[in-house]
Structures are given as structure tokens and as C-alpha cells.
Image (tube, rainbow, N blue to C red; front, top):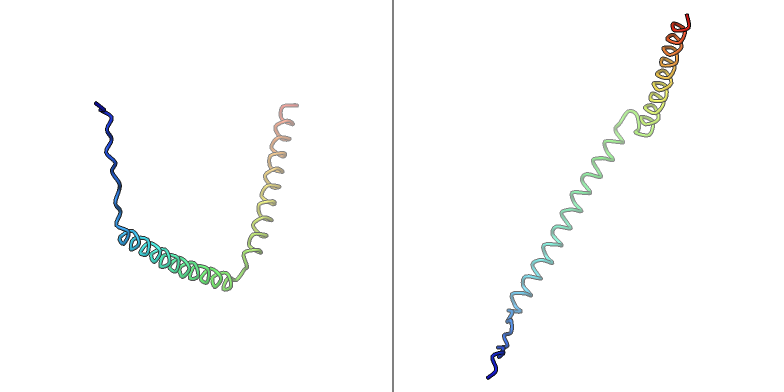
Length: 93
């Protein structure tokens, strides 16, 4: 007696439904891609328009901020040195 009898079962897939599903997914990807392209174009165009309408271009603003940061750093160092020198002078007395 063979107790290891295995029944062979096969999966039956409705190919028409699978084909319809794949087709719908492909159409969805195309529609989504078109939506992304339209939205990206709108954002890009608005950004370019905003930059074009600025009084001071971003590159000049960045240069000004960099100069301000360097000047503030230099002023801070000078103040720190002055305070340090004043403390050292007071301790030397």
C-alpha cells in the first residue's frame, strides 16, 4: 500500500483577465506619467518665472549672504579677541 499518493493539481488562470489587468496597468502607468510630466512642467515654469521676476538674482543674493557671513565671523573673532585681551590684561594687574 502506497500512502504517499500525491494528487497533481494545476492552477488554472484566466488568461483573458490577466491580459485585461496588464493592459489596464499599462494604461494607468501612461496616464500617471503624463500627469507627472504636466505637473513638473508647471512647477518648472513657475520657478523660472519667479527667478526671472526677482529684483536680485539668486547668485547675487548668495554672494551677498556669503560676504555678510564672512564679515559677521570676522567681527565675532575680533570681539572674542578683544574680550580675551581685556580679561588677560585684568588678570595681569
